[in-house]
Image 1 (tube, one colour):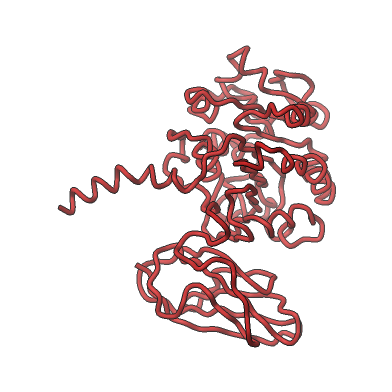
Image 2 (cartoon, rainbow, N blue to C red; image 1 turned 180 degrees about the horizontal axis):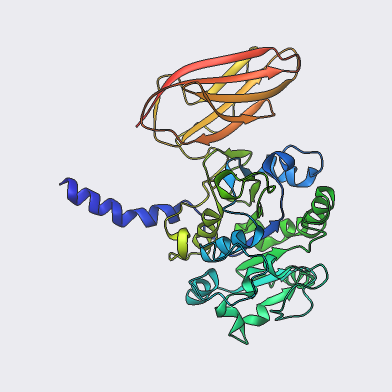
Length: 383
């Protein structure tokens, strides 16, 4: 009987992973460059990106795979690092995202700002870096006169958007002045607001679109998980509102998410065993059986709306809490068994935390502007 149930679960597992991601007719991936999570999220240098992060979903534990850039771009498109040589100029013939999209009959384009011409597969020129455009290396593109036509200048994005001609998948690479590689975070943020904000007025995107904005890698000095702690923001009508996911993710998770959102159930490289980004769901309730983000504090202190004390929950556990004091609350933190697992510079939180099975002591703590401390302690069980 146990073997029979296990066989059923193994058959259903790929379907369950796919079901976590709503299908979309327009998935857009925008790449930014070389900054850490802490330098971006909560920074006054990027008010527009932070407004999206606060309204929609941000992955608070997202890590790049490697240093330098190129291996991360290949992970996003092939599920493999391929090379750590930023000067690489070969053709990549491994399994990749284009191969899977073509097999599924999906359309795509790579919109690269400052690329010199349609179909260009040459080296760096001016403000264009080839390594920021991984599609220009893939054999499925390089060896196809038809697919090379999907390598287009970014100006085509505005035209396609205005004429309702966006493909199923859009890859967007600003040039090195506009992606924070050479330019400032303020310049990158202004570029996003000018060029990406119009996407939200598009009726097709409003229906089921998904926008992912992610940095390729962190600062060189940050080698956590290979490429350092980086920001990843997900926007769309099917994305949990005001949500922060504390699950560890990397670029293969984004690759898996993109293909799953396109209704594709085959995945290249590490994406085949990766889970999709867990940021989707109706409203802002999130996964894990939580009670949503509607949580108000009637008295001074920390109010935890989800989970409740003594509750038994599956992992990840969904936390929703808020804090109130005479002075403004400036930060909140979740401790699990004495270890800090999540923090935010806000007076409320809404996040998932992966936890092992068993009984856990949880403390949700807050600080006000005078550094006064408020706590709510509980014991929960994870099955």
